[in-house]
Structures are given as C-alpha cells and as structure tokens.
Length: 235
Image (cartoon, rainbow, N blue to C red; front, top):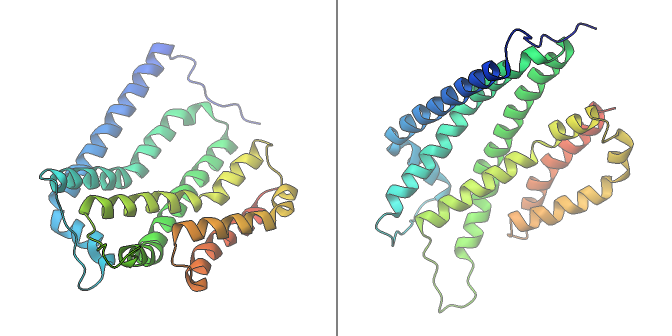
C-alpha cells in the first residue's frame, strides 16, 4: 500500500503556520459570504418569510431585534455558502497525511455530507417547517390568549429545525464512518430496525406536533429510508 506523504520536511511550527493560514482564509470567506447575504436583505428575507403563507405577519417588540436578526441570518447563510470551500481547504491541509485510499474516501465523505445536509434543510423548508409553524401559530390554550408571533421566534424555529433535519439526514454518512472505524456493523442496524422506527416516529411527533399521520409520514419516511440505505452501504 502506498504510504502517506507526511511532508517530513516541515516542522511542527510550519504545519501550525499552514493551519493558521487555512483558518484565516476560512474566516475571510465566511465574512465575505455573510456580507453578500447581508446586502441581499430583501431577497433573503422574502425567501425566509415564504413559509408564512398569505395573510400572516410577524411582530417586533425589541428596537434592536430586526437588525440583530438580520446579522444572525446573514452569518448563518454566509457559513452555509462558505462551508464547502472551508471544508475543501481543511481537507487540503490534512490530505498529505492520508493514504491514497483514505483521500478517496474522504472526498466521497465530504461530498455526501454536504449534499445530505442540504437535502435535510430543503426538506425542512419545503415541508416540515410550514406544517409545524402553521399548527403552532394557530394553537390556543384559551380563546382569551391570542398568538402574536415575533420575528426572532420565527427565525429561531426555522434555523433550529433546519439544523436538526440537516443532521438527521447525515445518518448514512455517520453510520458509514462508524463502520469504517469498526464500531458499527450491518447486523447491529438490522437488529434495531424496529427501535429506530419507533424513535423516529416519536421524534417526528415532537418536530411536527400537528398530529396527522400524513405529516408524521413525511418526516419519518425519508429518514428511515436513509437508515435502510445505511444498512446497504456498510459492511
């Protein structure tokens, strides 16, 4: 097997300086992408507000909340946009220390991670969040209590659910990595199929508290299919 290139001519401080350069470039890419997102305020928030539906509005009771939310959303979007480039730079830093087959697996791992996370975010934006928000925004414990949804609450729920669904869609990547490390085997996944299905149904009920079977199925089925895919791709 071909030995990895460890760049033995470089000292510890040379590697540290190279890592510092990667981190500085990554930070600059994040800030530039965030600045671009900040300047696209109208387009960006029109996209974020689309799940609101017709006739629904948000309120703001904090004088700084709209500006702070604008910055927070811009930073989040900037990180998502810059992340593939950041991951590629970090890979370039560690690649010389990897075997040839490890480099090939690493590239596949990174591409799959990015694509699956994006698919989870899209699933949340198009399906899960609209159902969840409409149910929660109309839910009342008493006719004497009216719902007035704040901007910060709306954006926080959208971002949290997006991250959660993005992470859930990483199931095949995580299981593949654990199998490569010798921690997980196909037999383990087959053994706990029913347990995972029940757990996903419970999680779907928490994420989408509408209670109707159609919404539960929309959330549970894609993640469970990814679990079955994990069984096929690992040893």
